[in-house]
Image (cartoon, rainbow, N blue to C red; front, top):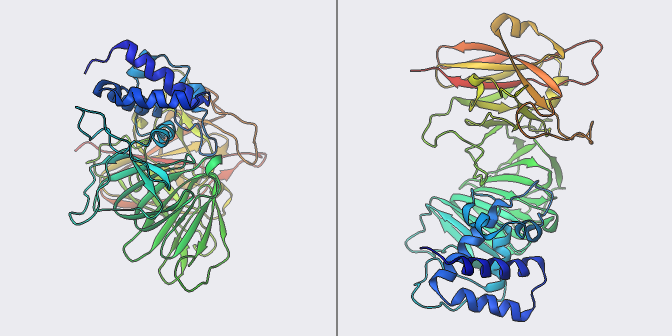
Length: 468
């Protein structure tokens, strides 16, 4: 469908006024009338609101100034940009204003009356390959959701945006209930959530736990037995055990920081989440570049840290090693090529492990990497530390280098990361390799710092399957 440029410009102008807060009641009424006037107008509106999703979160702790950024785009630029699963906060705002339920699926031959729920608090903005139960309720895209609405489905993903800007993606099988503008209850499913400053305090409860966000990005998995895994990807959350088991008892909330995760069993026992993978939870940013049907290479990671006192987790990124790829679960450091040539070709798009940087301080540390098929395993070791004997004995120095761009952290809060290859490289790492000819478990050791070194980093791990 070819849309007149004048129509696109009208949609752009009127939506922009609403988003920047300058629209009055007459402007809103004019926008509603324009969108309802023709199939082309409705299509232009929906396309425009999807396109605004490119204005994604710059971090999980900041609400983007959507209006200002949106108004910098010309209608032509907007029409050329498509969303890639990012946070469509502007779409949620506009759907809330217009009260749209299903323009996308409604007949386009005539205007469809908007349906508004008085207690609506969120919008279902995406439903991908969802298998709704035949005897249950199905929810079309752009549906407004109210307190008490329950999304039950057997497979697929739905993406919700609450009116506070909180983004939640749920993967089935799932049973997810809207409990208000700042809380939800999950009986089953895998959930990813991003919360900005306006959504702090957003809460997700499960049959055995309560997770309160403090401005963050986190993931939750709830099994059919009620077992709940919680992992903090950025920021922090408070986790209370047995907050929803009906006996009125709730443990004191435990603060989980970036890179920490816990498993809560139905009986209330709490244990460590050893590792999560990038394909385990839904991820709108699609950081996992590996084909969906590709077999994982790393199947498990473990270490000898005491599970009773340690809550850190490893993160396995399937096919994701690239420029500006995050390096550690507990730091905002990034991998980069050391110069304009980029990262070594053998590492491009490799499956890799985000390790825990603080493990560099652990004496006698050991890590076990379980490899499912013949592969080359790479260890990225900082040039600032001594080469440990376990590395020299079992691996070969390839002579290749990769850089680390150190972002802000609790030790160096003023650091900033650059963008692109060779930018803002703070530390150089040597690339060591070892061929793993058969499926097996590879043991790695700890870091040996130089005697006069004050600041240094943990090593990285990457793996590439051998040609068949």
